[in-house]
Length: 200
Image 1 (cartoon, rainbow, N blue to C red):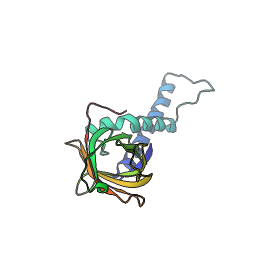
Image 2: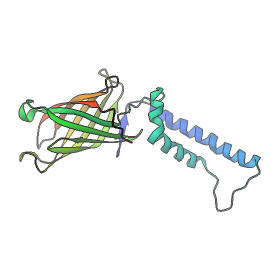
Image 3: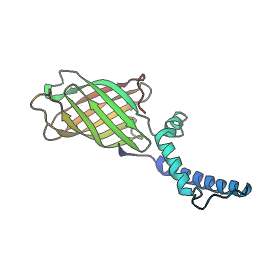
Image 4: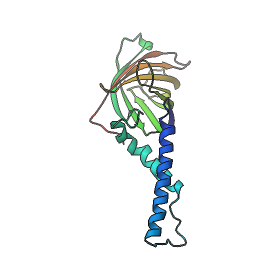
C-alpha cells in the first residue's frame, strides 16, 4: 500500500485530536499508578505520550475511521471493497465492453488499487482523493499495467492515469482512463461495488 492525498483539513485536525487524547491518557495512567501506589519494575517504562499516540493512530488508521465515517465524524470516503464492471477502449473504437474487476484496499492514510481484466492487470503507484469538487468526490490515480500471456501482441507494459467519480448513494465508480505514450489509448470505466465481498 502507498500513501494518498486528500483535499481536506481532516488529517491535520484529527492528528491534533489524537495528540490531545494521548496526553490525557498518559497523564491519567500516571495518576492512577500514583493513586494506587503502584510502581513499575525498573525494566518497564511507563507508557509515554508517544506510546499512546502511536497506538491510537494505528487503531484509527486501520479500523476506527471506517466506523466514524458512518456518523460523519470522518469525511474521507471509504472505497474499500471489490468493484465489478467494465471498460471500453479507443483501441477498438469503444466497440467492445471488457469485463473488469477493481479491488481497493484502503486505510485512512494509505491505499492500494488493483484492476484486472482477462488480458491484463494493473496496480496503483500514486493516488489522491478530491472530496470538494463540483462533480462530487473522485478518485484519481496513476497505474502501471502488465499484460498477461494471452494478451494481444501489441499490448506491452505501460503506465497511465485513471479518474473515477464516486457516487456514495449508488455505490458506483465511473470515469475515464488515459494510457502512456507506449499505448496512447483512452477509454471509459464503470464499476458497481459488490456489497457481498468485504476487504479488510
